Length: 233
Image (cartoon, rainbow, N blue to C red; front, side):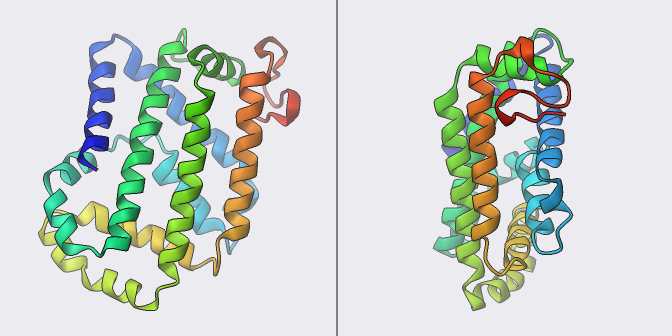
């Protein structure tokens, strides 16, 4: 977990040291959040799937700066190990790994942008220039695996009560943001009563999009839709 958080901090350092890169990465993140919101509008509007879709949109695809949260985590890893059960720790470790990989990809696509203005054409061009289809595939797999891990946790009846009881000690130990994140993910996936269909939908859509990103002709992409089923804002 500390290694992954260190990788995230290294990406931030690269952006801070490279003129204009932070703005480009921020533009990529905002565009990706809009893309997710458009791709999964029906899930976001669903009473059953909406909370989980919002969790993905805001916690995994959001443009927020998580520097303060990450610094907090890095300082209190021993407390995390002491306070939380192994099943929760494994999920937190998976989240940290996904976070690190996503930050690496965001930096790479940001470096490939010519300006901080992102539209469907420049987004596809950036992905093709950075040329990391294997990393994108791994990012999708890690996202889906994280979803399955959260789904498994919700099937342990005592865990939600235990998580709620840990709220006070977690806040006292400086783990309030982690506690919030875990509770939100747990509640979002628990409300679905099974995440199989939700995760299958996300996995299928993301893999189709990834294939389109690396196969598309950027010059042929229109603002609202592109070839091979590629839909971008």
